[in-house]
Amino acid sequence: MFPGINLQSEKDSLVTQRRYCLISPVRDEAEFVRRTLDSVIAQSELPAKWVIVDDGSKDETPKILAEYAEKHEFIQIIKREDRGGRNVGPGVIDAFYRGYDQVNLEAYDFICKLDMDLDMPRQYFAILMNRMEIEPRLGTCSGKAYYPAPQNIEKSFAGPLISEHCGDEASVGAAKFYRRECFEAIGGFVRQVMWDGIDCHRCRMAGWIARSWDEPNLIFLHLRPMGSSDQSIFVGRMRHGFGQWFMGTGLVYISASAIYRMTKRPFVIGGLGMLWGYAKAMMTGKPRYDDLKFRKYLRKYHRSCLFRGKAEATRILDREIQVTFR
Image 1 (cartoon, helix red, strand yellow):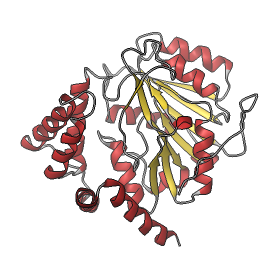
Image 2: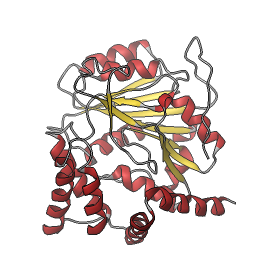
Image 3: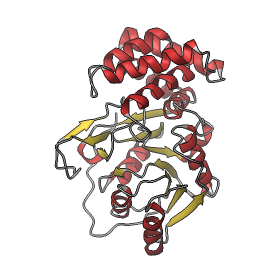
Image 4: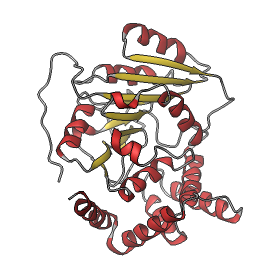
């Protein structure tokens, strides 16, 4: 459905007629932020605008951001007051919207929420835009996230990498690239944990396709493992389990998902963290996403995944979307 696209190497980075805007929440990322800045500045097609929201950093992050903003006019820095600590999930989206509110979205064809602990391949955004131009139903997409293996001391593409095992049916939260019309149609992001799962399901509900690809030119480095920025990976997996509860996932599906996760790094503990986070939320009566239509849709999709496999269940939905677009 989405053929590979070979782009010729270009001597210099370009700003083209198709305009994309990056919005990046950041907090205390001095260790990695230069890698992200350098990899975006080296893109074969530069963003028309890059709004970076400094969410109360206490390290050298503000100084580094100011250095780059002085050299590159498309970079805009917004500073927020320190709210006392990381607030993964809703805090990140609050920071995103602080930047989003400063953007005239109609001036751009695409918008991307981009984390600041990533290293992006040079043609990353150009390839995504090309694929969206080929497939008008494609609303959000991304490459796949990998993190450097422990022996990859330089944290480089050349060293051993470990996949974060994100499904093909969703764009990756660290680098969510959206067609503007699709982002507006789904009402943007929910300000809660699991925002980066809810949005892709809402895309399909609204007649759009969500996708990610595991291909050499679209692999990007997550310079620290997903979910490890706040306390530990185990806490991050617990948070994911709570997010599944909030989103509306049923007990059978979360159990199957957790068992699968136990076979991936970190072995066993990641799946146990998911189960405990879900069970704790269920036992304490935590609130769920207040959209009954969405939760019914999600349960139906999950049942299809359990009986048919996620790939086939998603293909069925995509075929239904194709009929809708016709």
